[in-house]
Length: 80
Image (tube, rainbow, N blue to C red; front, side):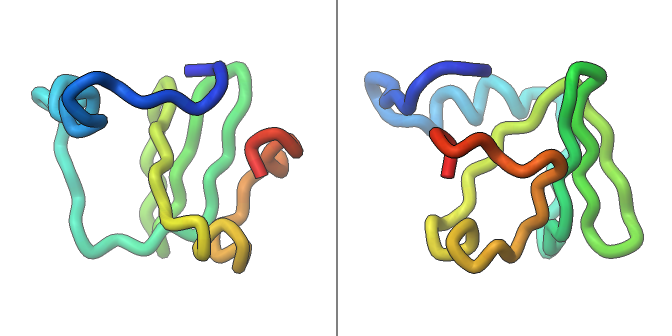
């Protein structure tokens, strides 16, 4: 999911709803680390590891500024 930031007609919830169909959703998890590369992505939340082809990360700007989530490798400058 490369590219610049964008807005979807009718709101971003439509994309999220379509992507979530049949996918388990976990609440109350604090993500510590996101590892990503050509082979996919690993999301680490405490002692649990979730693997996927890709992840859509939507966190508040303050979380990114505090570096509360470790990205491995570090996000490119255009994403920061």
